[in-house]
Length: 221
Ligand code: HEM
Image (cartoon, rainbow, N blue to C red; front, side):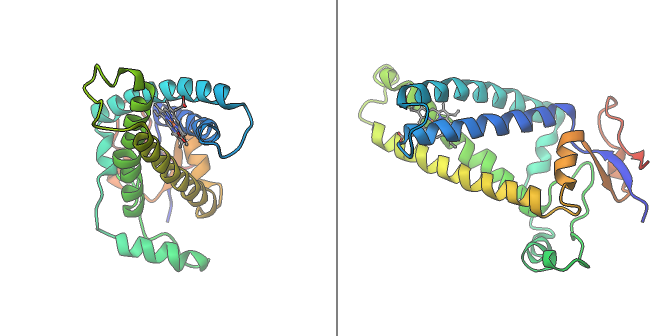
């Protein structure tokens, strides 16, 4: 079947994705040093870099949330059970058979398959807010009294939850890099889409949907 070249990831999404990836790697490196997993920058420098990088990430998230709300792109993350079993069967069995193709037919308006929707929603609604809130509590430890938090929470409890969320983020990160790098056909397919914005998709009316500044659904060269 002739495929069409579709703009799947807008310029802002690509910027947000890669900038967030760099910041999260930096936060993992400095955070696990603060935690005492190893010594590289030294505790003080690691903690300082961790706090600066965290502020940049918080600002990026504020912009990303705003962008998702005004463009309506948040709808692409709403979980659905439709087709979930087929995708799980593909990832666990079908993927090892070169003759089997991905059962999910991506479109411009539904670019995440059911498993991705669950994984990304868990990341966005659970892991990220937990890390963000506990991180800010950690940062504003000296203001707990003024905020009425004294006696309600403890620093060791906040550190424990923050570190648990950091491990959850590490697991997500490893799974995400594995899926992006090893499950595409050809292997660089997903990476290329997140770099150029374009992907070759089966024709679908939804592929031409989008904002006027997005030249969607151009015929494949
Ligand atoms: C916006 C998000 C974040 C904020 C505001 C934040 C803030 C903080 C702060 C203030 C500390 C204490 C540093 C110190 O001792 O002065 C800390 C520690 C830590 N952070 Fe974050 N952080 C954030 C995101 C992350 C991320 C994304 C990771 C890793 C995935 C991470 C992993 C850690 C770890 C492992 C520690 C050490 C905890 C301990 O053993 O006490 N943080 N964070």
